[in-house]
Every structure is written in structure tokens, then in C-alpha cells.
Image 1 (tube, helix red, strand yellow):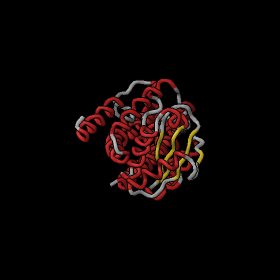
Image 2 (cartoon, rainbow, N blue to C red; image 1 turned 60 degrees about the vertical axis):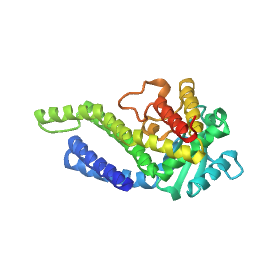
Image 3 (cartoon, rainbow, N blue to C red; image 1 turned 120 degrees about the horizontal axis):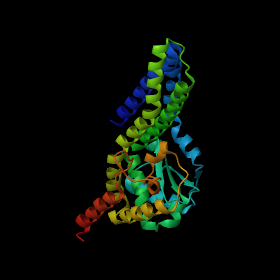
Image 4 (cartoon, rainbow, N blue to C red; image 1 turned 135 degrees about the vertical axis):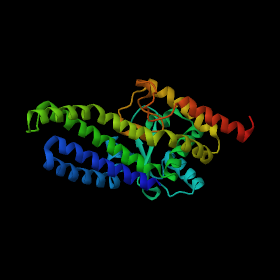
Amino acid sequence: MKNIKTFLLLFFLSLFFMIIGNLIAGRSGMLFALLFSLVTNFISYWYSDKIILKMYNAKEVDQSHDLYKIVSKLVSKADLPMPKVYIIEQNQANAFATGRNPENAAVACTVGLLNTLDINELSGVIGHELAHINNRDILIGTVAASIAGAIAYLANIARWSAFLGTNRRSSREENNNTFILILTAIFAPLAAGIIQMSISRTREYKADELGAKYCGNPLYLANALKKLELGAYRNKMKATEATSHMFIINPFTGLKNINLFSTHPSTQDRILRLEKMAKVQYDY
């Protein structure tokens, strides 16, 4: 099912590019857009995880690192292949998982995460990320990040095309196409946000639930989320909107309110769900 969703995302990306390419430069533009989308699809599937890790200047750690040991312990409980483990030099407490499948996965944590959480809370966060790997969310999430970036690039092309009037057709047709290009420049980023939202919000609940089982106590993750939410307000993160849905908590939480188009459900709602799990599990 996850692979079908990924295929559909890539298919509609290609179709979307071809339509806009035709508006910008006719048949030659459509051909260029097709080639561009094919390259984008190829890179999204095979290399987007490496690009995202490089984007955040993530550094791989070895078996001697404490974070690696925590991941290794939880991987045994989850019965998953050992992912590569990375650290990102940023102060905001956050983490994400990436890769195209469990055999080619990576978990990345910020320095702020390691400095903010205790070992139980850190286990909760790692459990959450391993749940994404187990649920095979990482491929579609990573591909969606590439698609969102590509759509943003497309919006810039449409914006400049509308401004410069690159279409050399009849005046009426050119005006119509310019209007469509302006709409594309405005609504393409919104479309990217909807794509991110549609794949992110429900999967976070599922990853919370399974991650709580991996770490052994739902309250470990609930307490971690409380600290992460507070930390997002205190520490800004150098991140991109295109990859925001990949993190355990939206890195821009401190800069804007959660709304209909948020990539993550309410952190408070996630915490309440985990606390209810703990109450049932331990009859608190």
C-alpha cells in the first residue's frame, strides 16, 4: 500500500509538471517538464534520503556512541535491521527517520535532543522513529519532501514566467496563460503542503503508539514530546518547509500556530493519547 501511494505521488508529480510546462513554453516546455520529472522521480526514490541528510549536515556516528547503543537496543526489540545513526548540530530538540526501506534506513537526532532528554525520553523518541521505519512511512515521507521541494521550484518558474511573459502566443491566449501561471505560483506551494499534511498527521499517531511499545512505557514518549514542544518555542531550527513533516515535531511549531494545513497533529493531543495508553497499560 505504501509503495502504491509513492507511485501515485510520483505519477501525479510528472503530470503536474507536464501541464505547467505546456503553459510556460508549449510542447517543448511539456517535453522538458517530462524529462525534469523523470529525473526528479529517480532522485527522489534512490537518493532523497542522502540529500536530506546532507542538507542538514548530518554526521554518522559509530558503535561507540551512546546514541548508537540506544538505537541498537531498541532495534532488537523492534526486530528491525540496524539503521545508520546520525547527529545534526542544531540546538532544537528534534529527530527524523529517512530511507527507502528498513534495510536502507537512517535515524537522525539533533544535538539539542541529546542535551534535553533523559535516557528514557530519548528511548521514546527513537522508538517513534523506528516505528516509522517499521510502518514503512520513511519512503513516502522522504519522497514527499523531494516533491514539495520540486513543487516550490516549479512555483518559482511559474512566477518568473508570468512576470517575464515567456509565452509568445496571441495576446488573449498569453493573458489567459499568464493568469494561470500566477495561480500556479500561488497555489503550488499550497498543494505541496496538502501533500505533506495528507501523509503525516495519521502516521504520527500510529508511530507514537508503536514507538511507545518499543520503548516500554508510553509516558517516556509523552514526557519527551512535552519537552520537544517547549524547545521548539525556545530554539529556532534551520530547516526547510519541504522537510518539516519528517521530524517528530514540526520544527516551525514555535513560529506559527497549528492549523488545518499543519503537517503534524496537535502535540497536546498526542500526549493525551499516550497518557491514556499508559493508564490502560499500568492502570494508573
